[in-house]
Amino acid sequence: MTLRYETCPFPLIELAALVFLRADDDVGVAEIAETLVGHLQMEVVVLFLIVAVVLVAVFGGKKRKTLRSPSAGSSASGDNVIPFDAGRAKPVIGKRTLEGAARVVDGDTIVIQKTQIRLFGIDAAEFNHPYGKNAKWALVSLCKGQAIRAELIAQDVHGRRVAKCFLPDGRDLSAEMVKLGLALDWAKFSGGKYRSLETSDARKKLWLADARQKGRMAVWDQFDAKQAAGRNPN
Image (cartoon, rainbow, N blue to C red; front, side):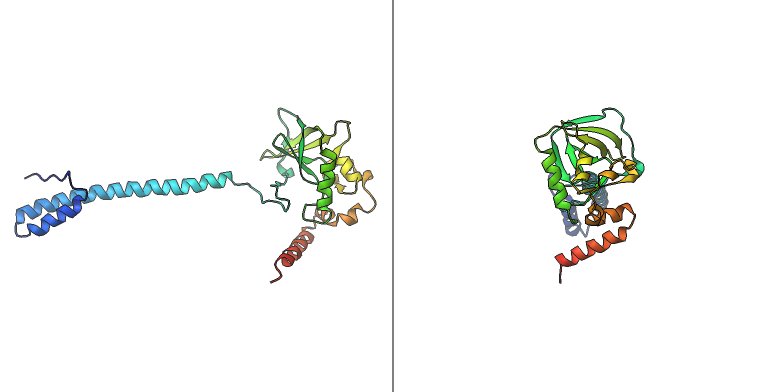
């Protein structure tokens, strides 16, 4: 006797019922049991394949989401400011100049044609640091309504750029920010080009930027801890 169960949506339930009804028929029970085992093996394989597909979908989706996530956190201004990786930067290859309207991120970072650019040779206060907001809005004022020309100098491994940026009249944005007392010369990268333009009180006002240049990052940590405590007094 050949057993076929093509119409029942739950073949294992039907087979189990037959075993119960024919319990006194040794031959029938044996054949039904053999068929039951066959169905069970097939359903185990199908179940395994379904679980594998679900796991690939879940973990594959998480991996893609991770790859799309930004590699750095958001600044207090709401923009994604990604630090330029000077240690692994290389000279720009290919197009070396960008020109157009600039969106200001902070006192030393702009975006032209969807490219994030760090102004060459200077260091302004972070947006959440003393004078950070002043620096951003001063740079906004300089760039507003202007076509900024960025001469790309270097690019890090993540595609972030550093550039000498100029207004249409030829003024250097880095120099202008230093002359306003809202940015410091960063001799490590500029060779001291803008040091003579610093205002007499600039390093006192921008003491956190000065500390960074001197490698005193513990000062930053202390400042950030005080800010966090102020936001969360309890």
